[in-house]
Image 1 (cartoon, rainbow, N blue to C red):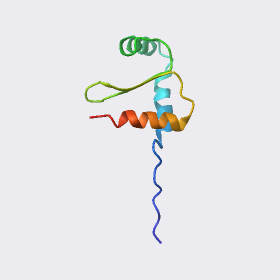
Image 2 (cartoon, helix red, strand yellow):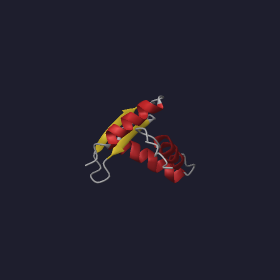
Image 3 (cartoon, rainbow, N blue to C red):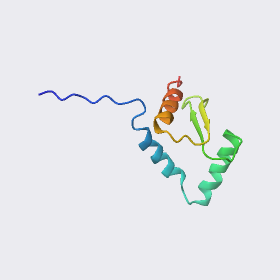
Image 4 (cartoon, rainbow, N blue to C red):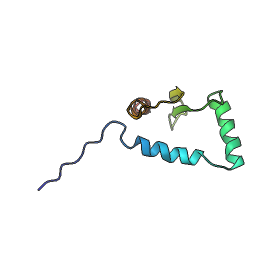
Length: 88
């Protein structure tokens, strides 16, 4: 009997990746905290959080920016997928 492959929903797996990246950021290292503040000043000119950026890995161009929390996982996944599709 053939197994049916489950189709992935748009953005499936995003939550797990988001949590993984969040764990990397939540360092208690003073050096890491200073570097994060430097990046915030350079990239978004703000120390407010959260601010989400999606960058083109080749050019560094900002493909998506979201200032403020997004509490609906499906909405966040759709926003993220839309920004990622802009990668050249």
